[in-house]
Image 1 (cartoon, rainbow, N blue to C red):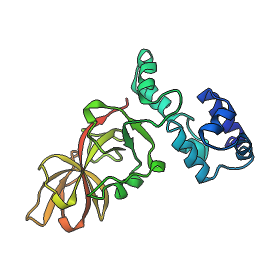
Image 2 (cartoon, rainbow, N blue to C red):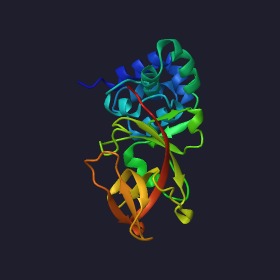
Image 3 (cartoon, helix red, strand yellow):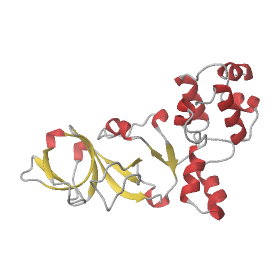
Image 4 (cartoon, one colour):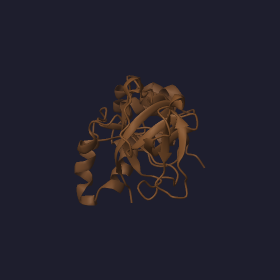
Length: 232
C-alpha cells in the first residue's frame, strides 16, 4: 500500500537530515505550504519544484512511493564499495542538495526529443540522475540499454554515454555504435554503409537479430556512443 504524502515528506526530511522549515526555505515556500502538501497527493508542479531543488530525490518515489527517496544514494551504493561511498556521494551531490553536475541520465521516452540533431534539449524534469565520469565529460547524455539486440557488448540495464551528432553535418564512422532515432523508434546499433548513399545498414551484436537497412530520410536524430557504465 502506498504511503501517505505526509509520511513520505517526513521520510524525505529525515533522509535529507533537514527540518521542514529548511526544506520550505530551499523550495522558496512557507512551512505552512509544506504542511498542506502533506494532506493531499503531490501535484506535478510540486514534484518538479522538489526535484529541481533536490536533484538526488527520486521522481518515481515522489510520484508512486516505490523505490528509495534518494536515487543517487541507491545508485552510488551499487557502483562503489562501502569505503568509497562517502567520497563518491560527496562528488555526485553535496549535503546542501545543490544542483548536481554531470552527464544527465534520461529515460528512453525522452530520447526522440533529445536527438534533435542540432542541439541537446533536455528538460530538468526528464533527468533521472547525473553522473560525473571524467572520461565521458564531453558526452551530452546517458541512457539505459533496453533489450538483447546488442548483447554481449551492451546488456539490459547498462548505462551508455552519448554525444549528439548534428544532422546538418552528419558523418558516420562506419562500424561505430550509434543511438539512432528512426520511424521504428530509438535504436542502439552499429552503423555500416548501405547499398547506396541513401541508405545505412544497422547491425546488432546479437546474431539472433539480423542486419537491416533504413533510408537516410527516415533518420531524425543521431548520437554516437562513447562508452558504458555497468552495474553488476
